[in-house]
Amino acid sequence: MLYNSITFSKVLQLFCIAFGEIEISPLTVFILGALTVFTFLAVGVSSLKLVQSAIEEEGEE
Image (cartoon, rainbow, N blue to C red; front, top):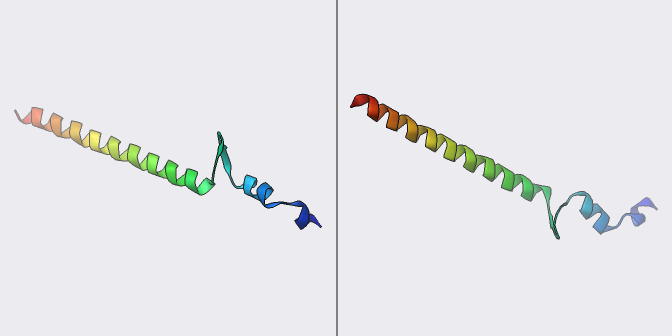
């Protein structure tokens, strides 16, 4: 049967991403990517607000 020829390791390889010797699930890669994008955007917004407040203070003086 076809089911017997497919082993668990072959199925696991379909859903894992090889990263060197470590196999990482796609969910882990997605979570790490989402956290990275969120952090990048948060730092960008914070930096933009800091620059805007510095420009506003210079205009008042």
